[in-house]
Length: 211
Image (cartoon, one colour):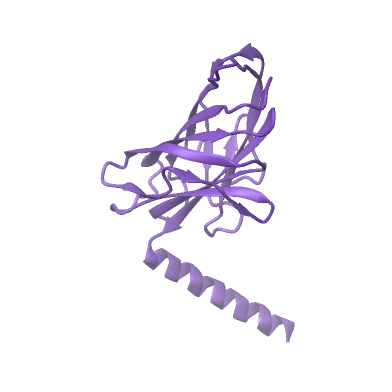
């Protein structure tokens, strides 16, 4: 099968407490909607430090041809409810149908968490607009934090150009956690206008057929 792009997540999980709590299980996978496809992985054992293998996959706006969010789900268990820290790094290839003028990353958990140490290493001309050193807010029954990366030239959809970013998440309150990472590329204005026009034309055509 021809690989259309590469989605890389280098995930380093470091759980460090005074009580020496251990990681007892980790697994991750895409959510199955096809926007991000990655090989699932799981591990069980007992260790205070665990380096997860890189996740290889594809990112594409394949659901509607629009600007679909892509999701990777991380399940983590520990032997206590103390404060673990999850260190996540990403390298996301633009294999969509449009250039990216910005990228929004939403993080969701059922327990309160904080986001610190946000990084951005590529593109070199981009920067972290907002989201570092924040406490997640409760929204619709889940805690949510948002990171925004922007301010440079568009990331072309050439199958080679990437955005490389990372952050740390610290959470507490349970020995079992699920972290949802949602990635939403933002199109350049001209692409957005073209899609809006296409959706308008399609809507008019459907209304005429219904008549």
